[in-house]
Image (cartoon, rainbow, N blue to C red; front, top):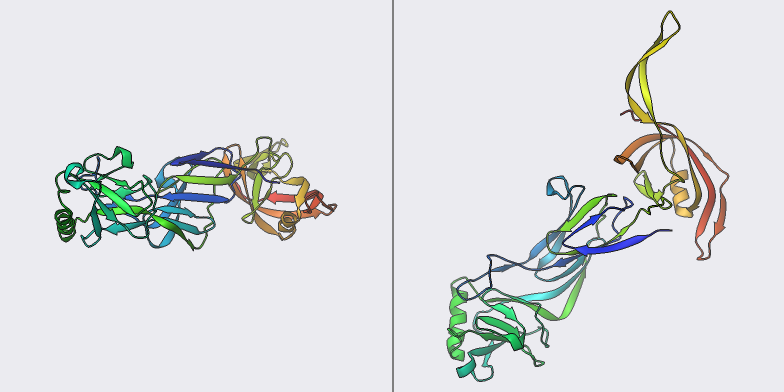
Length: 352
C-alpha cells in the first residue's frame, strides 16, 4: 500500500514526498582534484579522497537550513558507492602514488612514440577510462595524446603514459618518477580495482520533506523515496514519529481561540482573540495494515501528530479522546493482515 519513486542527479528536488525516511540513498564517491584544467607535468593536480560522506536535505536548496547526515568511512575512499540507508559501502577504486620502483616497460617503440607502460597490481585488466591521474590527462588508448595516460587495450595491468619531455628511456622515466615522489608531488593514479570490495557500515535514517532538495558532498545521488499520491489516498502522517497512512479526506479545519470572555449588560458576548487551533476531529480510515493500527491503539492520552497542511509541515500535540472499535480484520490476496473501518477521535491542544 505504498508508492515510491527513484530519481538521480547532483541535486534532486522532491515535490511529492510522503514525509517518510528515504528508502534508499545511493551516493557516488568520486575523488577530488585540486586546481583546474587538464593535468600535465606543468599543471599538477593533486588527488584527495573522502573520509566521510554527508547528505543534505533542505526545503530551499540552501545548506544553511539543511539537515545534515554524515557517515564515517572505514578508510579514505577514492571511488565507489555507499547506500547511506542500508550502510553498504562498495569500493571500486584504489590509489597508487608512483615512486619509480614499479615495473616499467617500453610500450610499442619508445623512441618514436614516447610511450612507457607502468604495471599496477590489482587493477582492472581491460581497457576503461574511469580513472584519474595527477600529472596526465586520461584518454582512451586509441586517442592517447601527449601528456596523457590510458589503460592498455590488452588484458594486462599496464597503464600507458605518453610524455615527450620525459618518456625518452625507461630508466630516465623511472628517475623522473622518483624525483617527483621525493619532491612531494608524486604521480598519483586512482585506478579501478580488479575486484570491488564491500563493507557493512551503520545505516542512517534520512527524513525527507514533502517538498525538499537532497544532495551529497561526494558525488551524484540516486534516491528512492516514498511518495504522497496526488489523490491523497496514501498520504502519510506520523504518530509519535511512526509513519502511517493518512485518514480519509484528511483536511483539518481551523478555529479561532478566544480568552477573557464576558457578557455585557446588553447580553453581548465579548472576548479577545488570541490565535487559532485545529478543531477537534474524528479521523477515519477505510483500511489500515495491522502494524499501523497497532501504532494508533498504542497511543494513550497525549501524543504528537505530524502532517502536511496547505501551508507546510505541522507537528501538533493531541489528546486521544477515543477509538471506535468497530474495525474488522481481514487478509488481502498477498497474505497481509489488514483492518477495515477504523475511527480515532482526537483533540488538538496547540494554539498558534
